[in-house]
Amino acid sequence: MAFTFTVTPAYTFSTSEKITYPKLNLLGTPVIYLDGQAETSQIADGAITTAKLADTIDINSKISTRSIELDKLETGTHGQVLYYDSTGLLTTLNHGTDGLFLQTKGPGASPEWAAQAGLSSVPISLITTAGADKYISTDSSGTIQWESKSAFQSVAYVWDQKASGTSGGNSDSTVDQTRELNTTDDPSGIITSLAANQMTLEAGDYRFEAVVPGDGCNNFVSWLYNATAATTLINGTSCRSYSGDRLPVTSTIKGNFTLAVQSVVDIRFRSSNTVSGGLGQAASISGHVEIFTAATIYKDN
Image (cartoon, rainbow, N blue to C red; front, side):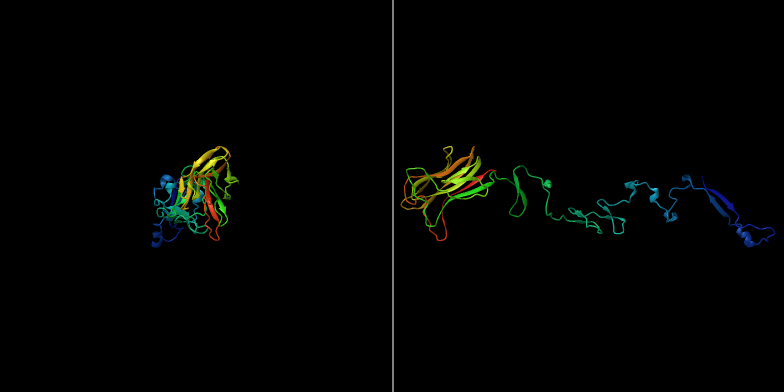
């Protein structure tokens, strides 16, 4: 119901009581009694101030959970972040410098803007590739970049090694000679076996590089030969080492080849002069072995 007002004199005379000026003055200060409650229509907009509210009023009990709308909060600055301070009150963190990240400092500390620190590890799912068959490398300035994967991933080395003072053997102008290969460095297992100067290789794509020396055997040439298929895989460079000068020269074999099946391959050599030490003269340097024919084999994984 609406408020009702009861007005009573501030002073009531008793029977036969004398009238005095002070008592008459009291009659001009009546007592007003209010009863009921104020209705919305009886309260002017903006008439109730915070000073008129009791400190004991429990505002939270009158507000439904999650019912305060965002537009009821204080207006802030674009980029500010709300967080609880050390007293448990909501406060704001002003926007940071462009490029900084919001960093938490752990329990009991306020968040702050900070530069992104390096990571000790990155989940592989977060790395975006630059396409198929790529790997990560660094350039001369240390910048990380994507590189195209080489078609050949495994490598093996094979060569002709002899004791110091031993020549590479005699050249023979009457036959195709198989150059000696007796030592390997093959951690990937490209060469299935090495026997009688011949290598057994599995089917696959290969790249091959070799140097084949000749010394005083006049005209000569070398080539990579597939003994299983009886075909030449790669021809080497043509060379000439004069028999009178005995100047050593190397024929180079370089190229790619593909084996459809497991095959036995070797390095062949043919010269126009039969001469002692024609396959390579010994250097005879103390403490060092003699190396003659040497090859590198790359295989596509």
